[in-house]
Image 1 (cartoon, protein in one colour):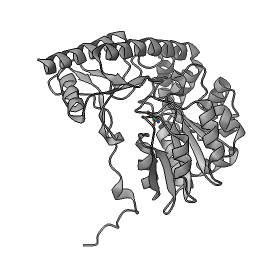
Image 2 (cartoon, rainbow, N blue to C red):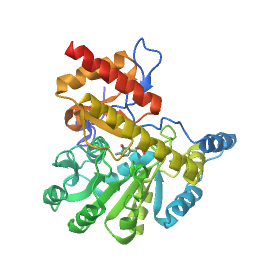
Image 3 (spheres, helix red, strand yellow):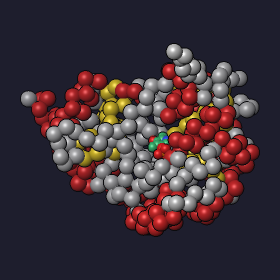
Length: 363
Ligand SMILES: *Cc1c(COP(=O)(O)O)cnc(C)c1O
């Protein structure tokens, strides 16, 4: 019998991405704090818009996303011609790797950077390279040192997942301006909206030929299940990405939901304020329990236990109480537990469970 061809180089080196768990066997009242979702749910305005769009599901969606791009451009003061929309920002990351990196090329990311960067790099046949961080914070000098003549893309999530730390504007400018010729800096702003008065690098992308920003509707906008993200960059780069984009990559309900969400400023402000208050409570609670963490700029906190064994035991204990958090050993942080900032009740519940875990271990 004839056999199937082997996959392209690099594909079999991809470690499958593990999504955050959402179920615990035998536990009914589960609190999911493992995927950085919005505890308030989606904006009602987006639900209504998506429901309305269902009536035209027999029609193909628009291929140019003109209406959503216009809404995004209006909300952020951008040129709509330089916006590209994807099936989550994951798809924009995929386009970038596919279009700009291949066999023999390097894709640089930070030591504890988002796992989709090495996954997408390998899928394109390129080689992912990790630059060391300094105490769980991106290090501009280490990133610049790690650049070679084969580096095509440099990914920096700012704030970063799973560490929750971020680089200041001056550091990001130094990184962008210090990169070699022919190398794109991708600023992943999945959590940018959680930071007060921060544009996620959009202004930098406005004035640089080598900077692209990615954003998502999955986090603060509460639309993770709809799969909508976008990118902003130089016209020439966006033009290249549009050539590899499928013409109907976003469905009509997804486009409608995202457009309603980006126009819903009240929802954005409320979520940002709620997250800040509940994050303060979560961090104060961890402090009181003597659990280490770096102050977070995002909608999660990376708790650091004494050891990998303690993190695993805490994770199991929390699960037995129906609380699901995220182990981040795959990110080089075996002692870490990434805890999404829930609503006030969710924060209290995870802190209670951690206190009980501590008490049981001490006994
Ligand atoms: C969640 C997340 C994203 C968003 O992914 P989507 O595909 O837009 O849902 C992108 N980057 C980072 C660092 C993230 O944590």
